[in-house]
Image (tube, rainbow, N blue to C red; front, side, top):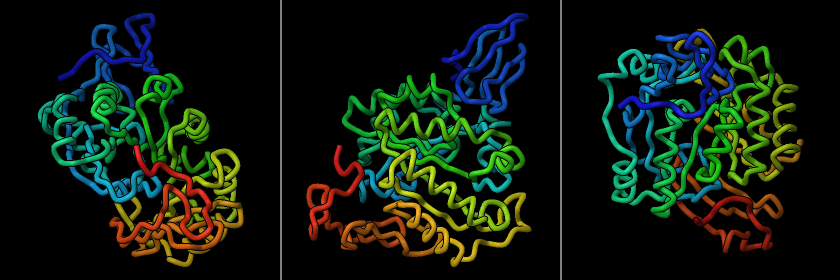
Length: 337
């Protein structure tokens, strides 16, 4: 189901420049970009994954993780092959790499209309574009998102944040929330372990905030890679200063995986120290992931329990019209569409 891509320009000698993500690949005829799913055919850039899903699941929205966006609801979650990053610790590397190589005969075909119908049938309140990087299947997500809005559902990106401003301008009107993976706060780490730059991600976080997209940020804390207290403080300071202290920060525990099996798992005390650093920098809501049950939402003003969770499941919700029932302080988030 390949089709002509959006957001590219034609260059000399039948080359094209893809303007979808911050790599801005210049692609020769017959070659593909870094993501391996956008290919130059005769001077036209084609997306090779339009309409082909490798995953369709019903997830709790908390699994994204999004804790302040329609808590307790279900999100119809989809992915296609491909990614524009090469993280050495990627937990989804098998579906990313295998499916890219075999994208022509791997996965399940589904039109945007069929996806929205499935989401409605399953009682989902949103569609999440996730598991692999949604930026690289932009055309598919874009068409689906427009239909989802028409059907009264929200749209969620779980993303590495490496899109271009042009892409955000197109997608922004249909994107309600995003969890952005801030993998580190040092450009050298991005260059060495991911194959990307840090600054475009920071710029996009600020732009999404300005566009009114609800933001939550996730950092996988990896021993000896991004767990230095000063780096964590710099990340927390950026979030609080540029995105607002109300922005939830998810600190996830690393488990040895893929090319980083020689790294130890993150000690729980490292995450707790990182949480303290985040609070010192003014952040109101910090959650620890892959640890068990440290996921409740608390009023930052008086300490009242607002949402009680166990894992990804909401057990109790005490918010009253988006406010703390004890002191009346408004809790930042999207509680209803």
